[in-house]
Image (cartoon, rainbow, N blue to C red; front, side):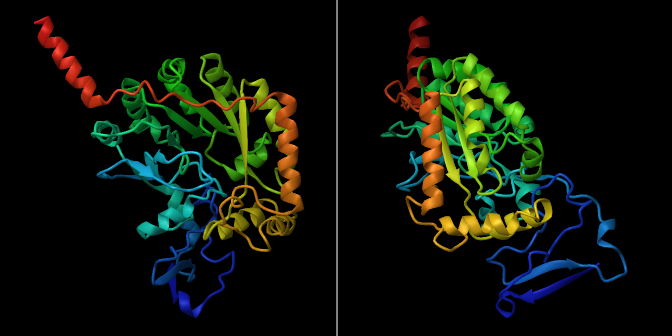
Length: 379
């Protein structure tokens, strides 16, 4: 095997087949290629030189590196996002969703947005301790913490690291509100904590359902829970008293667009009371990764999907403007929005938007001082 190297400046257009990794090595993965990140001075791709076939290399395995950040709460001021703070227990995501808009974040660390994003992961085991310290800072004001807005906090490696369990324990003790987005059935493991917090108006969960078609879901989200498991998890959470919503995301024209009403019907039957949707977003490297997926899995629809998407993105593959990046623009985007509104109204979804409580918050530092005071009095 040889490695071909070239300067990015010398080759501006890269074929969607460039950097493709042999199928037997990427089995169960969402990306087809592993191109170098956009910040790297050179682009490298494997080339079979005839001496040893690329298909003889071992399958890609998930590698997890532990990191120890100094802070865990991330702040944002985005005008079209309903939260100002979030937590990301992991970087990278083993679910391997071909459309994941978080993929480009891996390039900031010298890694690929392709297969590296789903095989070279980073975990933050000290997240719970960091969170407790940050919530204890003088003047901290409680607002809903969003978890799962970048990569899935309940991806498979959470079984091993249990970081979310630690985070929820801290939030539970501090009476701090949290909103979680996931497509994993593993969240059911923490139903005890979530139910207890929900009883105090402190927790809600949004389950992402991209398609009810198992074949399509498996192709796009190879290591995520099946559609049936997600609906089953919604039922379990709702039965435990945890407020549940459904995210129809992403909506992909000419691929899963026709399922909007069916997904909402199934989610409402499973106990969802709120719903949202997001139009497919293809920033930076995600565009090529998603096109590779289309050409491999749905070659007959690839051109139609991209053409329809560009129609809703002002002629481009992506439009990052506030207010439009989530829903698109134009007649087709308007039609999707109206269909969603009509379906949610018919099902009684979004009649009320749950606002989590912030008035119950108790700083972990204050709670520790009270416990110390109580123990001294008891003595």
